[in-house]
Image 1: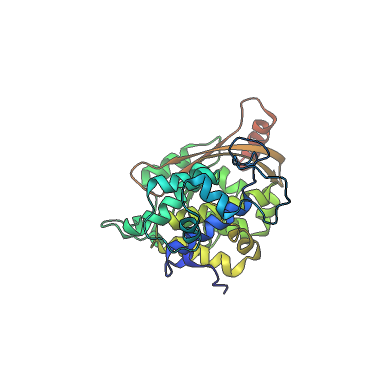
Image 2 (image 1 turned 90 degrees about the vertical axis):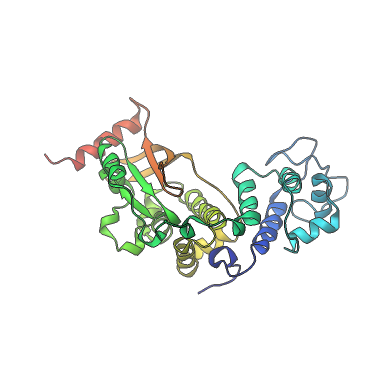
Length: 306
């Protein structure tokens, strides 16, 4: 099993190491400005200068200047040698690196998470290994007859899926309990690579989403178990995990290739399940009257007994 850079998966090493590792990766992928402005792909407001740059992305001193901290302080941040970091410094560094909202929350979770009880350790909360959806939630999932609906929990475990979701993605009832997991299916099931037209993008999002869960819920054994399994069994996951991305999917539009009806695009909205800090109900849809809607209706017809 590959155990390198595993602090986010096991909780056995300091989260400050993950903090510094993420900053280094973000700095490497942040393009210097060719003029002015901020944001990914447009530069950070730091002029490139007339001489040829020898580093990928920004230099440490450039980030420190943009963030309003000393070079020594920022260097220690990247080395994981700083204790608590103020909100002002976090905001300054995030602005300098043009981080999005999910990435900013990831950094805050790394700083604050160990001081907060994770959902798995809160009194009265069952361990994620035996996570279940409420019967009322399951009935609601099954009541969606025309669109695919799936409920996910810790580590992206699939806790419930209606007939259309099972037909488009996978049927949780058809696989062992330990494999009823969306990320495990995406990385380890050959049919997932066929089903997702943009598999690389989807898989990277899964890896980044697991990183967010690991930081936001330190001590969640199921999240750590899923990450450890994928690190051991998937070279693609190890490659994507090493990119140090952080992402939370709340909505998406995804092209699907289904063997029975061909290609069509599904839109997805992820809703928090009321009363649960982890579970999300993922509701997929297609625009009314669109070719995608026709494909979805065709697939539903194939599932309906004659």
